[in-house]
Image 1 (cartoon, rainbow, N blue to C red):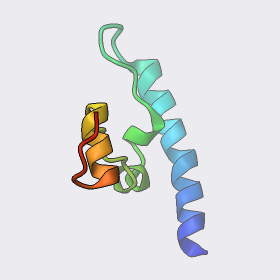
Image 2: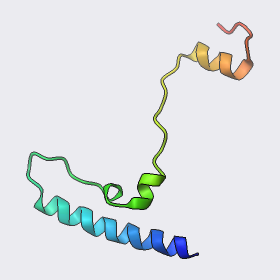
Image 3: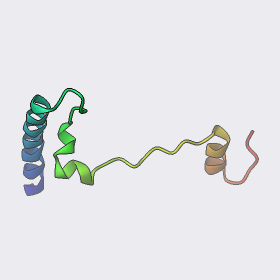
Length: 68
């Protein structure tokens, strides 16, 4: 419960920080997103996507059988 309250407060705070950053940034820099300022969002980052061919996916799903 306490962690949920902290997450909600950081969501609010990080939104305000991103807004302040974007208002004062130079036109050439990229805009910030709230997750850039949220310590909880860094812990929940998604793993990078791995590109695979369909035949490789079939081998993973079906074992060592020949998939064409």
